[in-house]
Length: 250
Length: 250
Image: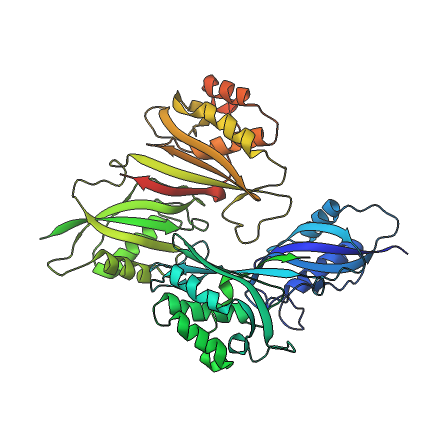
């Protein structure tokens, strides 16, 4: 018996998946990876992710862990990643890194910081290459005003206004460490960092900041919405296509 | 009669198209745009592009011109682009800009400079989001060595070694102004600028520089290949998926 805990760093295009979490009906990213592991080692293995991404949400740096008894045979991270990538074909899922970690490591509970990125394509013309990786907003937006308004949300707050009604977190209180909005050409990116987030928190931030960008809301209205602690006082939920789980730190 | 010459700046995902040029069989980008123009103005219009991209090649800044008699009715560039984008749906083709230009303007012959970008995803794991917009090379590549070798190709040369046998250019002599190779994370980009290029020239550069990046060729071997003026002495032709017509200057 030589059970080893493995940590994976995973990139995926979530467009045609029901999300990270395994379901009985629609295909999920978790299921795709678990099936690849089973094909590799002929064992039924369950994997745990840092964050459960929703249907249509992507990841550049999702982290997951699982335990594998591979006997005494040598197995490098490079070889495991290579084998899983081969078995994952043709899913748009890539194992970027695999390594053995301490048996106390937990992809979700050991995380000290998570970074998400939200992408808005802001131009009259439609998306072409990135059609399923952006939120397309035709009306011109002011990214500097969005950034200024975003700073209102930094710090420890009750984020009920930006929390989905289905959110299973015990408390609506979270500490937001960073929320930066920048424009590069037609693309506006929102980067958010915190130890953890509420369900739909970033998509609700994006929907609200879009109102600011279009001149329909001021930073002061964002502050009032936050203080109202009422989901109906926040902006709309931005679509999942623009969201990426970008990095998880431990 | 009030014939006006219009200039379009166009972005497209060339993955599922036979290329820019209209053909009798497979769908082309030119055909998609000409059909959108016809739907808009009920006239049969022919458009001319700065460069004919091959099947699977993309554009961020293709330029085309056409002549339109719209009578005395007012028509702004914004409104024309909006109408064409609506009629182009669901093609992954976006009209980024439309403007009236001098009747002497010619998308191809007036061009003073063209910039192409070639993208290589260089990592063991497969591509996910950018699957049809990169060349995936698993073997590690040294972008600095590629850049150094690329400088051998700068200047006025007979580029027969990097010219497709089907190339219709009268002369194999061209002046290459810039060929820069850079790495950002897993992505290696090759940017090329010149007044004009030979058929497959950039894809042949990319295939040859990839040999340098993998340590199989030296810069000196690139120089010898260039001086041989023989296509069989050059590296392989890199796949179309990584190539973008990025910008055309006038």
